Each structure stands twice: as C-alpha cells, then as structure tokens.
Length: 212
Ligand code: ATP
Image (cartoon, rainbow, N blue to C red; front, side, top):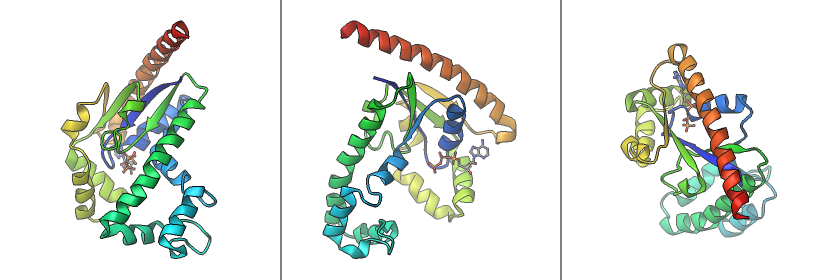
C-alpha cells in the first residue's frame, strides 16, 4: 500500500501552503476536509439519511447540505451531535481508506487539521507537524478568515496544544518567518523530505513484497 505521510498543524499554521509545495513536486494529496465534504455531497446516501433524520429544511434549495443550518440544529443538542458524528465518522474514515488504497503513487500526503484529535495517525507511516508560534498563527488565521480574534482563539483552544501535537511529529516544518524570508528554506526542506519519503516508500514496498 502507498506510503502515507500525514501533514498536520493548528488553524492557520500553513498546512495548505506546505501541501501545495508537495503537490508541485507531483505528490498526490488527500485532504480530510475535502473527504468530509465528499461523503455528504448532493446525491450521497449519507445526505439522504441526514435529511431523513433532521428534515428537508437541512437542505438548501439546490438540494445540498446547509452546513450553517446543521451547525445551528446540533449546537445545543448533544444527542443529535452524537448521532451525526456516529453517522459521519465511520463513513469519512472508510472514504479516506478507499482513497489511500486507490492511490497509485509511491507516497501521498494526507492533510488533516485534526489528525491527533481524531486519532487518524493510525493511517500514517510518518507525520509532519507544522510548527508556528501561537501569536503568529492567531494573526495569520484572523487576517485570512477576516474573523474576530476571539473566534480564532476559541478554535485554537479546541485543538490540541502545539506541545501535544509535536509529540507525534516525525518531521517538523517551522513556519514562523514571513514567506518573503522563509519560503526558500521551506521549499528546500520540502524537497529534502520528498527524497526521503520516496526512499521510505521504496523500503515499505519491498517489505510488503517480502511478506506477500
Ligand atoms: P487552516 O487549517 O486554518 O485551513 P492552514 O494550516 O492550511 O490553515 P494556510 O491556509 O496555509 O494554513 O495559512 C494560513 C494563512 O497564513 C494563509 O492566508 C497563508 O497565505 C498565510 N501564511 C502561511 N504561511 C505564511 C508565512 N510564512 N508568512 C505569511 N503568511 C503565511
């Protein structure tokens, strides 16, 4: 099976920025946020189950999931939130596994904001954590999302601490410097890691061949 490199980091840490550099080298990406949207896209069996449970008012006029409405409905209803998570989480995991298994490349990058929080490290052969000072993370995410500082702070508080996240890291990419100063260094690091992952993927493949 394809060698899986997990990429994680807190909100606004630079996952997309770094993932794009791997993609430029031809590495396929599986993005957990995209998978989570795919399982409930228009026409998906799971979307029908959600509509059956919560009523058609949970759908937009185009028949898509109205995420804001769903968030509102489950906000103060713990039981409904549990019901939804029990429905979605196994389906999202299953879809991730299918996409990983279908990947023909030697290795892929699995981009997951909540890799640690949702116990998804089990899918990874290796984990990269993006390391950024919380104050910088707060500033970048606030600017990007045009959000209130308090909103980003509460999202940061709901995620694991950076100290905890770093405990899972095999590789760390530091992203404190502004891109004008730091981008070349990150690109060089990504290139070095890419060579390393290609070697590790080869090792895994020969191990698998020995076992089969
Ligand atoms: P999220 O999980 O919240 O989607 P992310 O980890 O994918 O975020 P990015 O979207 O890559 O993070 O970066 C957050 C914002 O910070 C973006 O607007 C990005 O352009 C900017 N950014 C990332 N790295 C740097 C940097 N080194 N210097 C300046 N801006 C940066």
